[in-house]
Length: 496
Ligand code: ADP
Image (cartoon, rainbow, N blue to C red):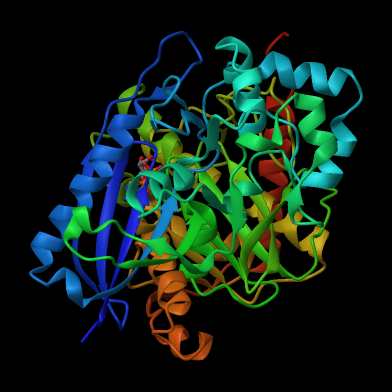
């Protein structure tokens, strides 16, 4: 009986593997951390061997811990850190250099030039992305330029890929050179509407089509795990970037469904159905997933300092000794006493987009204490998330019925209740918080025919807790007004 699904979750700091039962319960999991490389200020790299070896170890160990026979795994789903860029030799499989990680800023100048040359609107229109060094396109261009590889790429001797591609190439029989549509959508080279690599964008960045992978659906047969790994050719039938997998794993399948992941940063996505909504509020347009050749779209926004705000209180201000302590402290006072913290340490993203705003603490009086500031920090995570959600509501014209949450900081009950209050929407936390891995497993389960349809899958998502809005309208408005006045104070602070 093949009654299990395996998810490979290749993240920025660790590779994980989780074995799920057909009912979506976690049977076993294993994570392997790997080294980050910072060769210059603002640069971030991964050793491709580390990515591969950590992922292989995680998978083998998870299977071992589960006690199941690999033959009982019906299918594997892959999810990955997005935008991280690799380039390797088609014959030997050897990478030309380290992977350039999504966080790496080395191509900022290339992006500034694209914008200065007036290509910003065209890029936004075609890709749904706001031109930025995050996305893979300029990273690939940098590699081709730096290693002087244009000619070889032109001849088809090289393969570009994001981490999903790289894993498929190395782990699947026959070395398929593929990427799923959600990952392709983060390259700044893929046209959201035509669902093809875009000739104009390729020319603009001088990228030969011959080095690009074939774009496949997020669910469906991609290939078979090489039997050298687990002794069996297990089908790989699901693949999506991490935030997309998490949206799927939260069962946000209806238009208007929203999830927010509270990690180091926060990532919010709203399903907008078969319509790519162009944002007027600084959000990205992206694919939620592509199934049966049909893309479902989403709006995406992120908060740079989410859980990181709490890390900052702990590590820099030494106001708390561990993140979870923030909850009790926040609840020890019945408000912030008018204090607001705007954690714009690295600027503000959507809907403000101000790279020059900086961290700001306002409204202090003689009575202000540690608990007020800790509470203001947690509230700030919720306020920033609310700003994203309101932007999504304005762009899509839909108010979500609930907000589905996950990520490390969603363990904080005070934060979740405050989010429900300030956004005036029920906040729902699932039992399985590993929604990214669950999403990859569900895409795989759907892709291998383990489930009859989505209805059957939906029962695999189970609610743990629901936080019901309890703040009166007047207080809510007053709080939001205070927050927005505080944001005003933080804008344009750093001098260019
Ligand atoms: P990532 O995947 O980005 O590494 P995680 O989902 O593991 O992040 O979440 C870790 C983040 O959540 C950290 O920034 C940490 O400060 C924050 N965090 C963890 N537990 C709590 C808590 N109980 N209250 C508030 N923040 C928390």
